[in-house]
Length: 275
Image 1 (cartoon, rainbow, N blue to C red):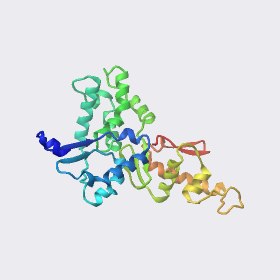
Image 2 (cartoon, helix red, strand yellow; image 1 turned 90 degrees about the vertical axis):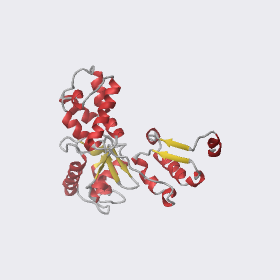
Image 3 (cartoon, rainbow, N blue to C red; image 1 turned 45 degrees about the vertical axis):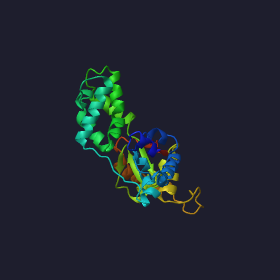
Image 4 (tube, rainbow, N blue to C red; image 1 turned 135 degrees about the vertical axis):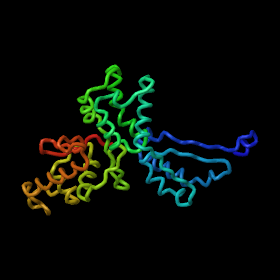
């Protein structure tokens, strides 16, 4: 193929690959398998004048770094980063173009622009895509209101609770993310609680199950006093409450008003806003 292109005065081929995010919303495992397969067979494309440039999301980082292409030094990794100032400018220009204005600042969207900027820096990560995804609900609300006046602080406070950044866990590497930001500082038991809730995020987890299976790490939950490991609820209820509180202090934007780790009248605990 490259020889044919050279005959028509084309020096080579540069293939650019992007747009993984929609595929990741379906089957992450399938995309991971295909990514590893591609990167492990790059020697088949080791031709003069042929290059591949791939823009891969963070979710595929572990697959890329353990592929055979890395081992055989056929892949060069570059992390794209921007400063907060650059990200602010990119975000403002993108919003202005979307709503048809020549220019726009975050303060034109909402009077809570300082809080918005802090929110973007905390959860938007270091890429324009992360910032734009995070601010989209506010932009939609601004456009729906006529895009003529800054929205009040109350609208922003409501949007933070109804459209928070999604929580995710890379179960291969035990890395926890909210939006594009990695959460650090989780102790082993706190992580076990969060992981158990994440793996069972489709349902409310009873408090007793969360204590025995996640906090203590037992294979089975004791059901009666005769079962091995049984404890009276009065013995462990406060222990679990304190463990949940410690987890909320790390995970929640406002631990007093949790949006991720939600209790249901003392009966159970459910992880909300996760993917």
